[in-house]
Image 1 (cartoon, rainbow, N blue to C red):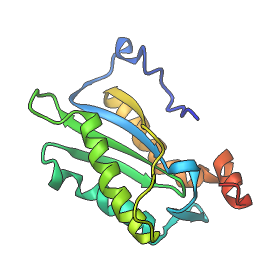
Image 2 (image 1 turned 180 degrees about the vertical axis):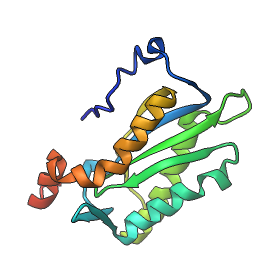
Image 3 (image 1 turned 90 degrees about the horizontal axis):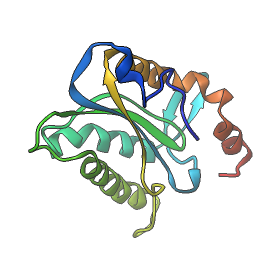
Length: 166
């Protein structure tokens, strides 16, 4: 599934806007097989399960594990997370893949433990990323993340979660 953040990520840098002093990425990570184990959306508000809370705690701990990493907007949805990661423009910082590998590994350990599993996949392979080039794109991504719980009722995956298909 692709997300319409209101800009074309391939040409937006040509359209002006204030460039960002850091590398900013809008990210989506999905639970394996889109299983709705992270929480529920009730009246446009996300209510996290213990598993969803473990994911949120792991995300919040990233800057202490990888000090150059900064976090911006973030939301845990029933079967995925959306967030913005900010990385300094420097050669001595971990790249985005390293940051996401650390997050997925640490959160998988915590979530599998809560699920009573000794291992196994928790996240879908890979992740979706959009490089944000300027302040306008960053604002649009923040707006998308903040509004995601209220648009959950219109999401195809919401229907699948309610029907027990995922």
